[in-house]
Every structure is written in C-alpha cells, then in structure tokens.
Length: 164
Image (cartoon, rainbow, N blue to C red; front, top):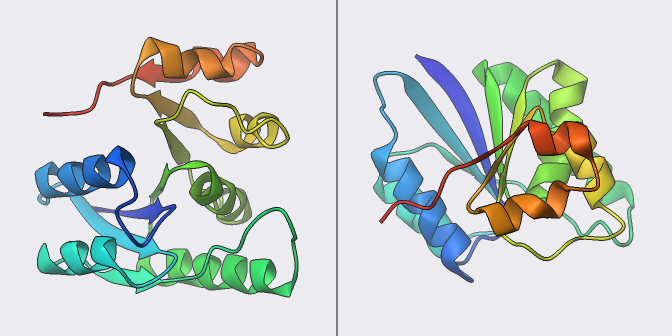
C-alpha cells in the first residue's frame, strides 16, 4: 500500500474542485493507496474526509503574495508529515496547494502531481508550478492549454475529465 498525501487549496467546499477531490477520495482503491489529506483550515472538506475514515491534518497554507515565517513553518510541518508517514506521492488540488506540495516534493525527493482544474492562469506563479510538478492532470484540453507556454510541462500533462 502506498501512502499518498493529498493537499487541498480550501478547507471549505468553494466549488467543483473540492467536490471532485472528495469523489476521487471515495473511489480511490484503498488496497493500493493509503490517502492522507491536508486542508488549510477546518471545514466541510476535513469533516467529509474524516467521515471517509481518512487521516486528515490541518496545516495552514498561507498566501503566496506575502511570503513570511508562516510559509516556512507550514513547509517544515508538511516535510515532517511526509517523512513521518512514508508518503510516496504528493497530489495537489489547486495552485496554492501545488506550491506547497511542489516545494516539499523537492525537499524530500518525492513526485508531485498537480491536479489542474482551472483554465485561468496564475501569471506570476504558473512557470514555477509547472517546474515543480512531476506530472499534471488537467480536467480538459482547455485547462491543459494553460501550460502551452511551457512545452515540457505541457507534454507531462494528461487530460482526465472529472468523474460523474
């Protein structure tokens, strides 16, 4: 069984991304994967993950606009969590989650999957997120096109539509 750390951008359900993440967690083959969830705050996502019997940790994921000591504390916390639980793969559900997962993945030498759900670019950040992701999953070709500026990242991106 492979421990995988799934990081959510939000503690609350703010849109389809969180609903889709919960659907993925419900359907994940637990004989092969041992999901561990990180949310940035208590909320509906954490409640539903715990109801599924999943270990769920609250680790703040501070804004990337004003980096400060809180960002480094969160990176240290996530790094310890990955090492202590033997996580073999990190899965980021959103851009902010991808930054944290990507940095931790680099620090501990683990692959990182960026689940890309939004077509709109994070102009100052996309180049870094594309660099940090080992692989990317886009929910559509339109969303995948967000990576066209980075041919290497575009080639490492697969389209997997949301489940119904």
